[in-house]
Structures are given as structure tokens and as C-alpha cells.
Length: 169
Image (cartoon, helix red, strand yellow):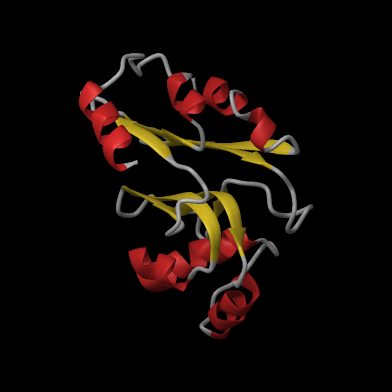
């Protein structure tokens, strides 16, 4: 199912795909290689493999953030802006987003705490669609078609949500 969801948005990242799956979470990524062409394959993990991140976007101030994080003992294995976010999360927790300048939507899975963090830029330049199903599945993606590629997601219109969207955008 995760492969089908990821394939539905192949046009967003034609250069490569990547997956991380365990018994609690599945993360997938489509990549358009811009920064760190050779080493930035996602999902990216932290040093001990207890956290994973996928990113859609670009962090403009990642070099300054990387310098700060290196001075505070973080070790990097790529040159990517994606890895910078992961180390920021290790340093600041959910407040990591306060330090980011850019357009982004990302997900971080923390194996230690069994928590999933989703975040996107303040202007919503990079989209994030999600649904929470009655059986406790939480499904998200960069496009609605990725979410709808999961057969557990009903294809019916929520009239209340439609009214709120048309009223308030």
C-alpha cells in the first residue's frame, strides 16, 4: 500500500524513492535531487537509528543551522537540509520548526517515544494532507491522491469540511 501511495506522486520526485517500515509506521519519500545529490536519499536517520525523517521542501538557512548543530556535537552523514531538521529536532524537540526558514512539509518518526511529528511551513507553501481513520490509522501525504491511494480511505465528501473550506479557505 505504501509503495502504491508513493508511486501515485512519482512526478513530485522523479529521481528516487525511499522507504522506512517497522511495526508501527511506514514512511515513504519521492526525491527531486537538488541539495546533496549523492547522499541525501530519504528517509534519513539520526546517528543511532532511532529517528527517521522525510521532507518535501527546501530549508534556506540549513548551512547556518548545520554550523550551530556541529558546534553542539551533532554528527552529520549527508550534506542535505533534511538531515539538519532531524538534528534540530534532537536539539529542540517540536520547537525545531521555529528555527527553520524555508518551504517545507516533513514527518519525523521518533522510535524512542513512539511519536510522529508532522510540520509544514507557516505559509503552507508545501502541502500536507492527512486523515485519521477509526481503526487508529493515520495516513498523510504531499498530495491528496497519495492519501486516496490507500484503500482504507473512504472516497466521500465531508459536507461540514467542504462548507468550512468554502467559507474560510
